[in-house]
Image 1 (tube, rainbow, N blue to C red):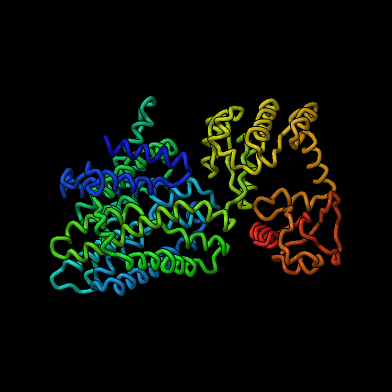
Image 2: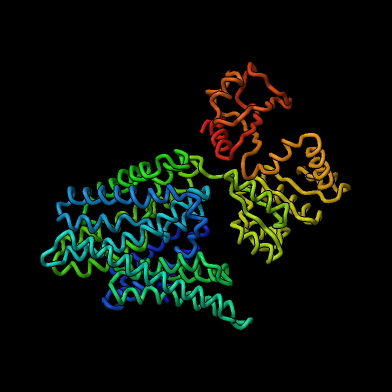
Length: 609
């Protein structure tokens, strides 16, 4: 009960401070462990009990992370994710292994064991960080994909290396065989379990009043079954099985998927809190102190050089901007897999090789503490400093207008949250890949749940003018949103919207303008109608001092291909510039860009990013 209570408290404190909870969980574990008040002791669990508890917990955590990793999500940053789990992971392994070997003088096998575990960046620490640090979807997709895959790879590689460490007559072939065999068994079992459960849920007719609860129970059982079956065939193959089963089920068209995901998220949060506190309680601070200054040097090598260099090289030539690549390189927190596996291995190593056990636990937990506390705590400030936080747009109304706006904004790389009181509408836009909140937007608590306090733009796009007025008023007065735009369905209400100091868009006038454009400007009308998929018109403030004093023709030459300066606004006056027109800092440029990638590059260029 104490551990559960501490876990809940840590989560509440973290939510209040808007920081990841893992750091609080680790500190709480140390306080209740033998190094603190001595409430939680290793003998309470026993070696076999500890292995079972940690193993099943890790299986649930990995399954839940993989369940949320859809194919569409991976495609957003597939090239970068592939680079991170290959080139990035290899450089991390080599850099960490070399540092441990050189600094501590341990055997190469022990150094590789430490390096293998610290490849993992895991969803248990990445996901909480991304929940409080908004970044573009392509950045989040790359980090989440890396975390899921590297958790599995690190655990299996560490087990294979451990067999080499404890073998009587080891050969490097032992590691390769053990790794590939566990990966094959895990993937095969996980795929089979995932397919069977997905088929069962699709064909089984569950009672209407218990359908959701039954589906949740079946999916949770699938996670445990995949882990247990593969683990019984080959030790530590269960992690790969749980991840594979999660991927299969998460990408299958199973009923009640969103409700299952919410339930599993709650279970995982509880399990994560419990396991982190227990593992930290079993940590010996003597292991950390024994490493001394040399241990800090290894942490710096792992965090700064191995991770940063590996991430930068792994993402060369992709779609990520330089500041996004730097953010990924500076954000590599380690989580539950290295903590759990290192703890269990140390228990086995300590009677025969206490030095190796000290180096293993000390290095792994030093890196975990450093990355979770510093990288997790500073992640928001780092994202703001590197200017990778996208424009946050809140759209009230998940109808056709709101959904079309969401498609367009997200195509430009903006972060969109939709709000609607209709549960079926929320379910529909979620299925289309949008983030949505179910609730009454005229209630401030609903807007707060949709993170309105962080919104740069709020659009009230419902078919009810009364709702739009209330939402616009709340956004402008209570949440102090910079730009509030409201849909005015009745022309007679335009004056009322203007009195609220918001920008009203008359539905009737908008349709008339669209018809006029289709008749008088058909080419432009057709292009703008497809703007969310091919390109767009962008207005951006010129903040790049290097462009001040330059003529438009010079700036146009440096813009991405397919971008044109169509209009310049200065001091409230709009003009169509010729090539010799000289630009000034603070000018608002209206750009026409053929592609969304060109649009993003042009915005960054004009803003000096």
